Length: 208
Image (cartoon, rainbow, N blue to C red; front, top):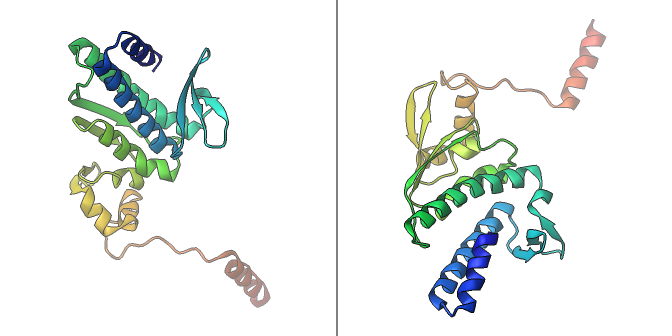
């Protein structure tokens, strides 16, 4: 981020309008990604002697190390991909290059809240449309998060389009992941609410 900002400043000072606009468009994409990942539509990047900071809508300025664990995990995943894309652009000499490739992510749901489990992969796929994402997960929210993905159940050895999983809803997928979907008659045991359990204990005690 700092290198990009320096290059943008040098381009502006040298009168290279094309490169300045190129860097400006890149920062707009970065800001858009951070806004999606952090769920803060008004967040802004700030550069000061301490490095890159985030200006929050409530007026606070925080560093990336001040993010919550879930937000920091999402930003870290995005930054890992972003840095490799930037390396490809530097090698090619094309700052607008959209490199193709594959990214393997193991259990991205770790430390992520339900919203981020739903939104992380779609945000990354939108930012890098030529990258193929291969993800291992135990989260039904992650499995259903992409529109055009294929979900492989490694236990049942089945492949299902993510759109079909969305149509069925989250409950069948969750039951399958928990091992309750082998038989149509199988269901998750019901647990009575606390009040009902207390009544059962009272009745049982009186009957005994």
